[in-house]
Length: 169
View (cartoon, rainbow, N blue to C red):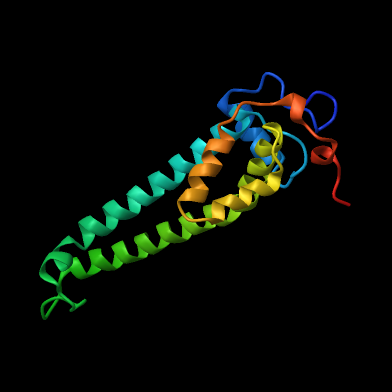
């Protein structure tokens, strides 16, 4: 599926919907040169936020329901009362399920950190800024807010520079 007009350095054409932008996000996962329009950035960003929120809420609900009694009473005995206790098996399953959810969360984060960084880099190029401005995200709170404001800026084709499209090698 060709989403770009001619070279990869030009912005996308008629690909403002979620399906086209998500496929572009996955296809150009390590492409730091070029440009990304606002829809091309915000749809994958929103999708990743929703995925991480759903996984996080599942983990919170699982942990809070399966371990609620232990949290309230402060129970430290994992084996419960003497003899067979079904809650032990349920809590064991809950711990395994919570660990699996955490592993899934970390796996998705690890697999999408470089593509999201590349997408942010290209989005900053499209608004006329150098991609290295995405390093502002490493400044706690203030850096994130400034970066979000920069990412929300409209496209500025008149500010596109040749070095934004040039290969690094």
